[in-house]
Length: 132
Image (tube, rainbow, N blue to C red; front, side):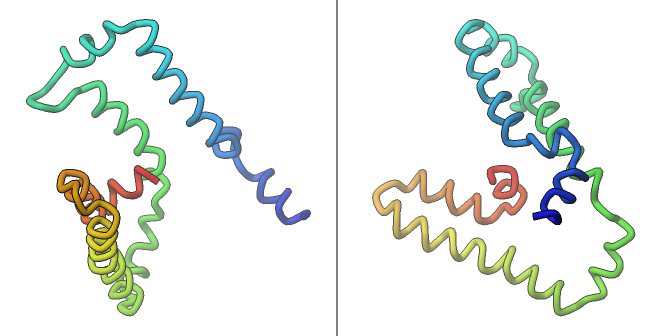
């Protein structure tokens, strides 16, 4: 119990209440769309090709803190551990897509569009991480 409190005390306010912040952001987005329906048009007006610039910037702002905490000095040590590297590649690029393929065919037999989407999520570990 004391160990749990020590870990909790080391967390920042943002990390400690992250689920709450996520729920508040979702609620805020829903309320914005409800009370300001024209916001969709404003967001769609700022595009580069087929990419919405506000959404791209929002995703970048969301992912930057996580990416900034990568311990780059540990990458060399991790890459030297061949067993761990092989296992990681096998799980991420082998088992993940195969599992999604099987799940797609088991649970979405008559829906090819959804099956394709589920398989693509299995092929893209970054997307799967963001969804989780």
